Amino acid sequence: MLLGSIEAGGTKFVCAVGDEKYVTKAHIQYPTTQPEETIQKAIDFFKQFPDLKAISVASFGPIEIRQQAEMYGYITDTPKKGWSHTDFLGQLKAAFKLPIYWTTDVNGSAFGEYTLAQLAGQPIEALTYYTIGTGVGAGTVLGGNFIGTLGHPEVGHVRLKRHPDDLNFKGICPYHGDCLEGLVAGPTFEARTGKRGQDIPLSDHVWDIMAYYVAQAALQTTLHIRPQKIVFGGGVVSEAFLKKVRQQFAVLMNDYQAVGTLEEYITMPLAQNNGSATVGNFALAYRTLN
Amino acid sequence: MLLGSIEAGGTKFVCAVGDEKYVTKAHIQYPTTQPEETIQKAIDFFKQFPDLKAISVASFGPIEIRQQAEMYGYITDTPKKGWSHTDFLGQLKAAFKLPIYWTTDVNGSAFGEYTLAQLAGQPIEALTYYTIGTGVGAGTVLGGNFIGTLGHPEVGHVRLKRHPDDLNFKGICPYHGDCLEGLVAGPTFEARTGKRGQDIPLSDHVWDIMAYYVAQAALQTTLHIRPQKIVFGGGVVSEAFLKKVRQQFAVLMNDYQAVGTLEEYITMPLAQNNGSATVGNFALAYRTLN
Image 1: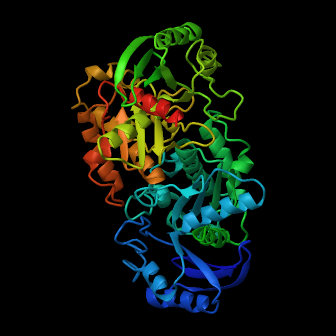
Image 2: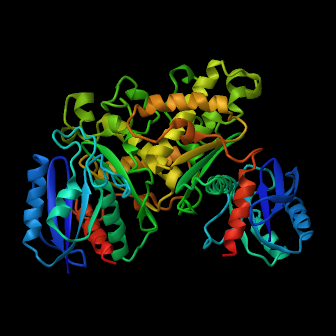
């Protein structure tokens, strides 16, 4: 059986076909340009596989995911130039008479990690996936479904207790200044230090400040949702950074609630090379058939 | 049909029997003293109703709600004197051969408000209930179930962006200092001003500070979970206070996400006289029979 995956990012698209064991058989990736031509490239790729049974899309956003909404399947008000009010799902449906699942990029990744945990023989009921990169967002799988009734959660915009050594930094979110995204998204490194994150050693204090905020995000997720695992992906994240996050999380939690071993609770993705969303899409596409 | 409700608070117990329309037929309330005698009074009350079909308990905590846990049905490590490691459910089960549902006080209230919305002909998929009183907590119903796989969420202990006019207040939480509970629980009024909340007019600036923090809690719930309604109960809350909360919420959200009319989104309980948990218990007891 062949299943299709589109991981639609603001910078690049990754399209893949895989089998019902979620093993990739073919894939392409290309830069995100204008909507119609970018989506058409995905269509052309999938047209090579006439046996394709279903497709799933994990898209950058904000997107409309409420099935009863008039704009269901659209990218809505995005800062990404040319993409506001793009009927992404509509263009795909015009090209394929197949079931097509539609969700957010972070939901796709969360479902991928949820699926990989199952495949590894360690099934979990509830998992949250955070991406910390150009932007910050999270998706949560709870008992096989995504959290978010009014629409997708936008965890990136919660407020945090400010680090005492970071009080003068105003944050970079155009909507909220010093929300989570405004304090820890990749571009905050340049805004704070004039240097890019990849050029700043982990021994630099700015990484402790980052870890303090990311630990608060993990604490919020724990105290609001109590998942069994919180996975962090995205360009800012590394195992060495998560070590700092776990330390700060332990201080913030102060033994108030047991979440198990922190090394197993706050983790890097199981999928290699940012592949969480592709696995998630295969699994979601497969599920649309059942 | 008769259903039983125990709302077990740290200060008082409210026991009630009601019918399958969730109308109370009889009730008692009495102060919370030592565990065995306090629970026995509930047992004696219910023994008067031999037709009772099921009971539900909404208890102060922390409590163990994971059914597979060894301590399921216990109050665990509570600061309430004499109550740590109380086998609450066990004492009830020894007295009644009936289905007994066991959940937290805020879950009971959340389910009551969820049920009342249904009865009012306005069913909702997801609702969060906050109590802001001696302590701060919240429960969320999502598609008929409670959120919290590892155990009950403890939203009261998230951290918040501090109000610029409140930076010197250290907060009163013995575990975390200036977490949500440490900043807005009822006793913070005396800690900040030397006066009790009920003696401070709403025009006092301390209420704006409180509203700023409670609005951040509502924002966190919105961005993590996206329920359709957030209900606030507890001694600190009034409609006039929620008006301030809505104003601050609107500023914090800055039109980033649509949650509908704020007067319908952030509300007082539908149940009168703190009756949410009793309705919730009746509905949960009823559900255990089906």
